[in-house]
Amino acid sequence: MLKRIRWLLLGAMAGVGLYVWAREKAKQMPTKAVDAAAARGAEVAQSATARGRELGARLREALREGREAMREREAELRAELERSNGQTPYRAGPT
Image 1 (cartoon, rainbow, N blue to C red):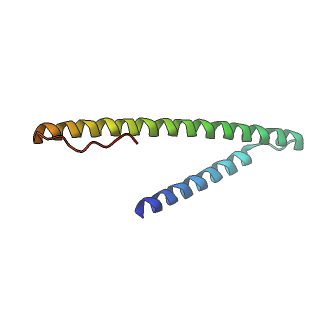
Image 2: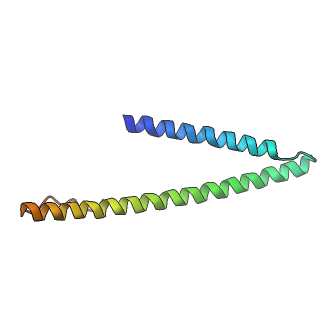
Image 3: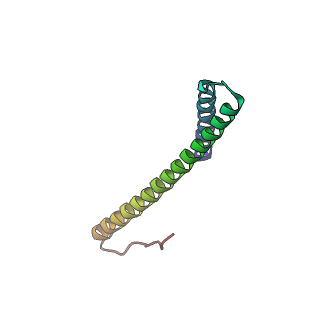
């Protein structure tokens, strides 16, 4: 239950942060001509989309590395337990 609340709050904070960032970016844009502003808006949208995709890819890579490290550490702990007990511990299959 606490994990869900933590992720909900983290998502809400990220949403608010992105909203504030986008609002400030919009305020910084000069509005000399309507067409120029519209073109800049499209550029900002494309840039935000590209950055979002890049961030998503980096997060997926970090999760993959974290899971790999977790599996390696679990294997180390199981080997250590096997050495100390002289028994074969339960081995979970790949998930």
